[in-house]
Amino acid sequence: MANQGTAVLLCRSNDLRHWEYVQVFAIRDRSGAAALDSFDPWEVWECPEFFPLGAYHVLIFSAAGKTWWLSGKLDEQTMTFHRQQGGILDHGTYYAAKTQLDKAGNRIVWGWITETRPLAEYKAAGWAGLMSLPRVLSIAGDGRLRLRVAAEVLALRGPETAVHLTPDENTNR
Image (cartoon, rainbow, N blue to C red; front, side, top):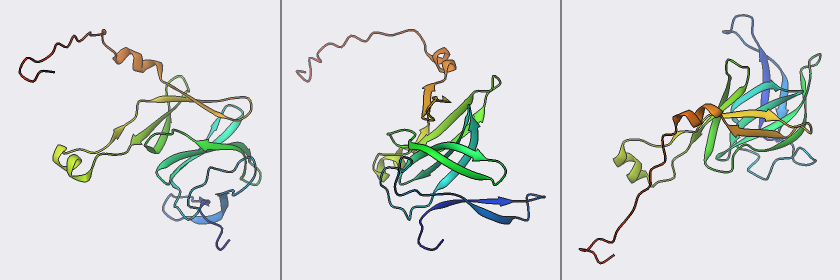
């Protein structure tokens, strides 16, 4: 496996303290229909998470400042993931995404919106970055990942407020 690039490894444990390596679970595909957009193949795949979604399984991970996804089929006998589709989860500054199931069984994803201000600005502010709005993941019949903002977010919105600006007489604007 030397010089193959980044991978997610499958390990097992009976006690969650002592782990045994089983096999390579997923490795960067450099060609074919499931290939990702180009990024440094030596990047670490951070925060990997693997879960079932509809008739598929999905692997999400973060690398090169983005969160990526792969979908495909899991052979449960050999614990081999056969990827079929892949791409970027969000084209903004969205990183370290993690999921959870809500009480209705929907797969909810949250991500970290990384800082884009200069270091001095966010140090002065005392905070950097923020969590995204929750999104519901689903999967299309062809295995492509879909997401939408969770409906519950709408309950957080208040009534629309109109702001009417007038020129400031002191600045002639």
